[in-house]
Amino acid sequence: MSTHQPPMPQAPAAAPEWQAAPGGPYPGYNSPIPVVRTHLGHALASEWTKIRSVRSTMWTLGVFILLVVGIGLLAGFAVSGSGDLSGQSPLTLGFFGLLIGMMCIITLGVLTTASEYGTGMIRTTMTACPSRGRVLAAKSIVFFVIAFVVTLVTVSFVAMVHASMLKGHGASTPSGGEWLKATVGISLYIALLGLLSLLVGSIIRHSAGAITIMIGAVLAPLVIALFMNASSLEKVQKALLEYSIPSQMGVFYDNTLSSSGPTGWDPLWIILGVTAAAYAGAYALLQSRDV
Amino acid sequence: MIELAGLTKRYGEKVAVDHLTFAVSPGIVTGFLGPNGAGKSTTMRMILGLDHPTAGDVRIDGKHYDQLRDPMTYIGALLDANAVHGGRSAYNHLLCLAQSNGIPTRRVAEVLDTVGLTAVARKKAKGFSYGMGQRLGIAAALLGDPRILMFDEPVNGLDPEGIHWIRNLMKSLAAQGRTVFVSSHLMSEMALTADHLVVIGQGRLLADTSMADFIRENARSYVRIRSPQRERLLDVLHEDGVTVVEAGGDALEVAGGKAERIGELATRYGIVLHELSPQQASLEEAFMQLTAESVEYHAHAAPAPVPRDWGAGWKGA
Ligand SMILES: Nc1ncnc2c1ncn2[C@@H]1O[C@H](COP(=O)(O)OP(=O)(O)OP(=O)(O)O)[C@@H](O)[C@H]1O
Ligand SMILES: [Mg+2]
Image 1 (cartoon, chains in turn green, orange):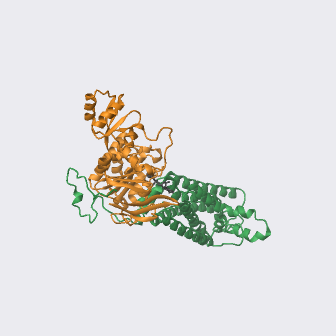
Image 2 (cartoon, chains in turn blue, brown; image 1 turned 45 degrees about the vertical axis):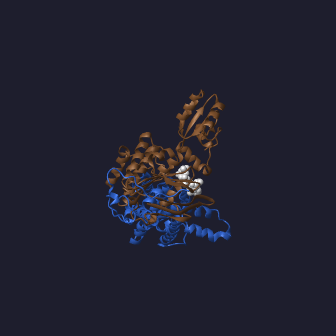
Image 3 (tube, protein in one colour; image 1 turned 120 degrees about the vertical axis):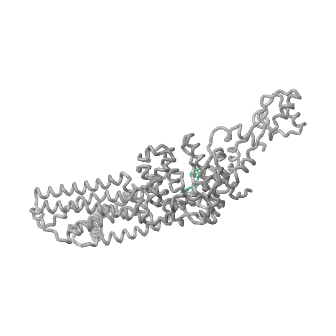
């Protein structure tokens, strides 16, 4: 019925230069803008601009710092005013602020990926960078570095304040290993937890849904364990308590909610494994699904 | 050059795009028409590698989209949904896109100026009107000064000045040798901008023709006549060998440009005419005719679906 017409450019007034251009088998316009072979560095620069140019980043990180520092200082004053630590490390007091503050990191992680689906920005992103794996990698790296650095600085500040504040209050002098765990260790854990949230956000593609799932994952094991009173379920209850995220965070301060379970640096390896699995899942889904 | 070969997309049971095969050539504006839900946006998403085709293939200058190493300097696209994070300023939105493709930062200011958003460059996109959002999308498409441009309903939400501007923009982009592929519902709009026409309905190709050919074939002229001496007029015209078609109401229609002849005949036989008007069937009407069977989402208004003075010309044709 209809036949395709060969290209019949309507010649503009001046002879178009593109016709003479050596464009191989595909003639067309040749831009004066230099052609760049894009790589991960470009994607990283782009993601950095994205994350620093939305207010939710400032909000979540601002609230995180406020919570960790505020609750940390309150706990410090409370202990130095009334009681004494009876030989405990002063670093343990940093735990409480982080317990609540991590919600901010989870939120920021989820928003980094899921908000692009909510706004449709993901289509623009994937058009600008068709390598989906590269987009996910760039987002993960930029977010992880920001989350780790912010957490490390905040947590270290609070830890130093606690150490100097509580010197005369029966606190032990923390060893180098304890310092390392309570600063670098917990910061890596929190940043990985945030990265896990970012990956869940990429899988769920819905901000509120992904945040709910992550908060559920943090709280559910503790809540479920509370209701497991039957003696037959005792083992399950114990495992839920010991491997819940708050308990695992406690391991970095050595004040676990129970005596057995993960110790030392175990929680870091556990979350690393879970995050790696989530990364593989998010990557596979990103490749196979439509944007 | 964009080449589609048997491109098909199925969403569950629903076939959104059905074996589309056509090519979009450089140097001209190619209009992409179809009613709501015809599959235009889906086709464009597949060209950009956003949706995976169920079957078939689409290539840009011989390559798949994800093989392009410099996608934004190669192809710029404006998608239907405004794909912008509302919390980011126009400047930062374009900046992050420029960085992702190694495009010089000065281009951001240049394209903002081109689309007339310089004054609100630092404002958040969520405060933008629909037309301003559309302009921001066009700015993003132009950012890499690409050789192929694809616009999904660009005139949507633009004011008359903006519509005029985008028409000229598309023509000048094509005149520079670029490939310009633009979707629309409006045949009349395409008649003003496009050199070539691809029409789809329910995902299937209905026409792939040059605009000039389409107009020649479809924009038929006829003469509309009303007379109180209707029977007498019919006899006279019949004797003279003029074919008359009864249109709605008491009107008669004669194909072709025979107004003078009919006027002379009426005078000679003393027939009173209430109307003798040359008419042109609109391209819009031709488009509706073409896609009539494939319109999925009809509006159910109380009166007849086609306005009287449009449909009349086609009943006998
Ligand atoms: N992600 C999706 N999931 C399921 N169905 C879809 C999806 N995207 C599109 N469709 C269906 O595919 C068909 C084609 O949709 P598409 O958006 O491509 O049409 P269109 O030609 O752009 O329409 P419009 O002129 O209204 O923009 C529609 O019936 C739509 O419901
Ligand atoms: Mg559409």
